[in-house]
Image (cartoon, rainbow, N blue to C red; front, top):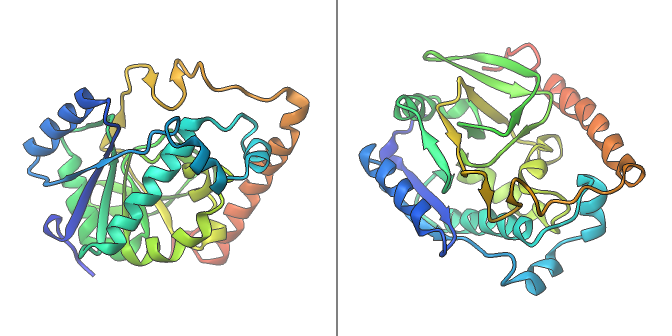
Length: 256
């Protein structure tokens, strides 16, 4: 089914204290003619006692190899609450943005082309933290639609279908990983998580994150021996991603 920008809802996740970031986002989105709604992000420190009840801290440490920060709880809650808003809306597709995205000159072109080919993906990212082992699914205009057998993380700018959000959302709880790592288990949740490359945006947080602090100073990796389950899981997930892609016909790109 073909969609246009007029069909989608745009949400920008922004903490109340980060007004400068919101102003920069509004300037960019207004210049592109993209109407949006701001979503007040959940500040993990203020809601820690409530959020931790919906998380398995031991599983998080085992899966991620690091401590579960209040900011990670807040990000997880913010995105899932946006999904709830989206599901309750009249829109069939959402563009969900974090507030530190820098849009390239071709972002609107890539967005329009992606929407015109919306039957080819379930979620689609326009930037990433990492994107390993891309598997081309064909071309959308000058862009390559990629699946990824390796880690594909970062949720700063992505499209998602309502039907996918409805189906996947109940299985995200309790939180046992960072959200982008949870969504990287598309083999468990059974959806097509793709990226459009070359990416038409990137993230610039100025080296300061409300989640992990300055230069990731708040993040604490567990001692090496305690990280062994994390390493085993990372290795196993390569196989699981590859197997799901192969089983569903995406390794050879023959489905697109």
